[in-house]
Amino acid sequence: MKPRFLMCPPDYFGVEYNINLWMTHNLGRVNSTLAKKQWQNLFESLSQYAEIEQLKPQPQLPDMVFTANAGLVKGSTFIPSRFKHPERQPEEIHFCTWFASKGYRQFDLASSVSFEGEGDALSEPNNNRLWMGYGFRTDARAHELLKVLFPQCTALQLIDPRFYHLDTCFCLLPGGQVMYFPNAFSAASLQTIETHFAEKNRIAVDEENALYFVCNAIVADNNLILNHANPTLINRLSALGYRTTLTSVSEFLKAGGGTKCLALRL
Ligand code: ARG
Image (cartoon, rainbow, N blue to C red; front, top):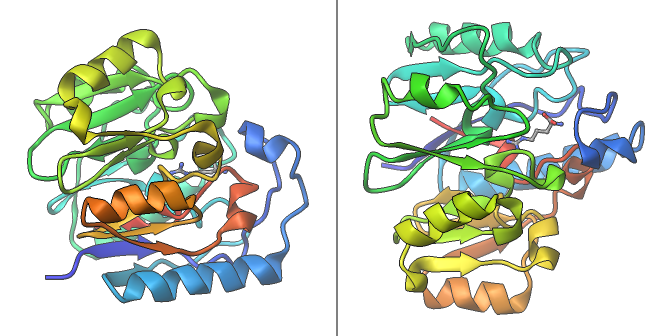
């Protein structure tokens, strides 16, 4: 069975407020025509390996295109996001309505605890572990609440504001490897990662690759869809059996998102 994802077309996408460092210098600077073309190219690339559901975009919600932040899906359960910033909070109702219409059961975390969905919560393929990022968006307290559904949940502290969501610097691969940018994590969290993953399973990326959001890759079986990656990294991934597709989402990087932010795993 093909993996399934949720995407939202970029009809109203833009950088219209400033809630992360990437947005700070890009206010009003998105080329909408190019953004639509890039989103369409990504949609077509991903369609080769996955089924894609689409959500209707809403005016005045420019970041709704980043469906990875809708929430987190576990089987037929949907755990909705509680956005930290008021600018994104009006998206919540639209995401919840869509999941309810598709018959998902909703599991609410406490409303006073911010949680930004798959942006900060990634399931490890082939086991039941969930990795949660905190420090910028998701509240550290979400860890205890998520444990109800994911008894094996490990929290990682993010310390570099350019990598404010876990999915910008940490990517779990189906062969048991992790691709990550070490400097994005506190010393203790880096130690946690390096204890859990044997050295042969750790793909540490350098800052140049990390800033192109290589860790923000869409993973569909052994296919990785990335904004960019240098030849050394592509070769390393291909030696491990991964096929990489590069598709530029440079307009979305202006808002602080790469390919994976644009697609939520269903
Ligand atoms: N402008 C959006 C925000 O700051 C970008 C979200 C990126 N999404 C992600 N899953 N990392 O919230």
